Image (cartoon, rainbow, N blue to C red):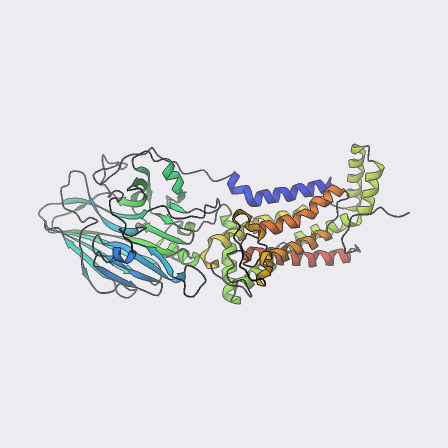
Length: 589
């Protein structure tokens, strides 16, 4: 019975590890019925009969062969900081050219920098812009996507803001002041000055537009696509979800909110609009298919406000465009009161475990100078936290190991009477103070920690391209060595085998499998030969499964096994239990 329970615990642990979020995903955000929203359309706002209309999804702009050609169509203001490079297009006042200077596509030093935003006319347009919309019944000329703005100031840097200005010839002057901090945050102050003879009703808006569906990993534990936090609630919408609802007209999901943020996320990068946190805005996710391409837009718009004759109105918004570094997201959240801004990093259901583990790793990395060493140190810390519980478990396992000869004798005596066998077994456990479920506990303790660490390795950019020692140059990627090429000794590279890539066993997965096998040999061995064979297969199964996992996770599991082996061996020695493998044997008479 005890071995059956242990086997069941292992199977359930594996099921939890790989299937929890797939079988029990969080409920999808409610999707409203599609409605048509375009350049001339408008949708209601609570408390009003109608609302100003944000410009609809772009279309009809042919893709250029070269990104640089599309950039050259408009005069521009250069962006220059330690983290960002690129430019703002004066035509349309679009932030549509952005390069992340601290990140490259691969580990190669000559690898291209990450190109993030691109203008219309390029292969994959992705940009942000801010503007004003007129209230229904207001007739006024407003700047649009083709308006050519005039600039004041030179290059946009953390020390030098720039101002864009445009006059509509009807007494209204529009200004946009762009400021950039040392990281990835743009502050955009929109201002309109009314020198006309009458009041006008205008509403400021911001939008992020993306053309073409990007290549995504498609992992069920990672969200990539539109998302936001609305009234303190995180909402994530998949690209496929929007496409599946498309029936020839714009798919629109509207959410009113006070504060929060809205944007589009990739695994490591984020573009997000951040309104003034004390004001109410209406946000939308939009999708359409035009020109044979997918078009996505996230936007926000405030209620219309009166701009009196001879007066002015201004509002300050922010745009985040860059790497989702957790510490920086938290700093922005605290500085500007942006609720849930750290949820842009998909910490998942185990958020309250995953994020503390991330910060523990972050601190240890800063202290030790290497994320791999940080993983080893964190493993020791976790073992210390669970030391009393694990000690109790291992002592009970040692007793079970010591009782194996008596248990085998009972099985032989009462082989035909299962009820009597169970009664005698329970009496033996009670008499000797042994717990038949003791072997389950160390495994079950590891599962949530393992999954939380998996999330940290997989979703945080801090782990991207983080080296360890030797051949491990990226802890967020699988071990690059392979048994199929003699771990690099044979004259061919690692073969690409598609779904069979798990055959590419590296050094660390093999070390993990060996450590798991050795730990298993310290546990009470099943007297049933069939169960013994099943348990013998577990290290092999885990070796192949973890071969495709991030190397940092495999290093954690291996080191955890080594520490467990040492702890268990010491306890067994103190209990007078011989250390060694093999099945239980019947006591000699």
